[in-house]
Length: 186
Length: 151
Image 1 (tube, each protein chain N blue to C red):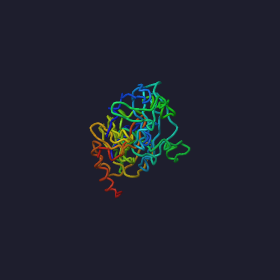
Image 2 (cartoon, chains in turn green, orange):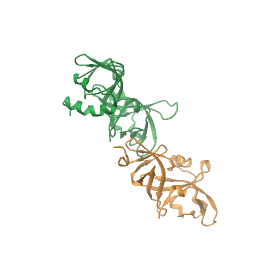
Image 3 (cartoon, chains in turn blue, purple):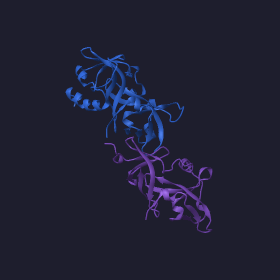
Image 4 (cartoon, rainbow over the protein chains, first blue to last red):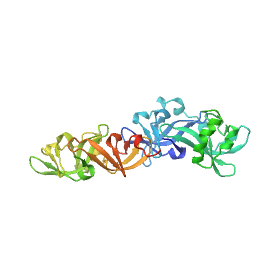
């Protein structure tokens, strides 16, 4: 089963063990690699009201599934300390934050600014698009190629992205495959 | 023969040797992996006691029989203390699929009163075989993805 979700919807979800039925943490933030276009992992908070950050992180490969209501892990040992985690999870670069970045086509046209990430979730998570605030102020969705150039203030997408700007998540879901096929990615 | 958690709640625990009423069934502690009742929790809060399933002489429709009062014991580990606090009660617990989607709440559980083997879970208007239960804890009962009704 696959489902499109905003990164902002994943933040705050409980992290639940499949084998234990316990809520061991909650999602603090989505760590994402803009260059590679994929989910790297999740940072975590403790569960409960007024609880603080958990030092452990959850690498993408240790996630059992991401759903509408919870992030599932096999057991609590999947949460690892930063020193035991892959480097990209333990030390995400400051330029990983693409929120507010300008989305420019290779020809130099601005499609808008990034407002949120869109992930295709289920038994694995992948970043497949961005929610953008279009130049006219409206909301739009663009599919992502597998890789793109990112500077920390702007990201450059192929020109054909402009043809695939959609108004809603349903439209984006349909556009992703077509878009990647046009780019010869699938 | 089949019994259910909902029907079993409140049933009296009786000593076979003294015919004394030793309390009433608060809920039933299960081992999700084995799909089996492991203990009967009698009473609630600080006064809660456990009776191991192996100590049950008969889980009857009107009373649960044990040999005598010595069958009742205090919780022995963290999981049993959670159970004594009612935190592991299956009835009313949220059900979630292993894909992370909420599936409703556990409204009833059927079991074989002779062996203590779990049979089916009623989750809203769905009947789910106990074999689909992957884990059970204080937050949720986790069900296998093939029970997830989402496409």
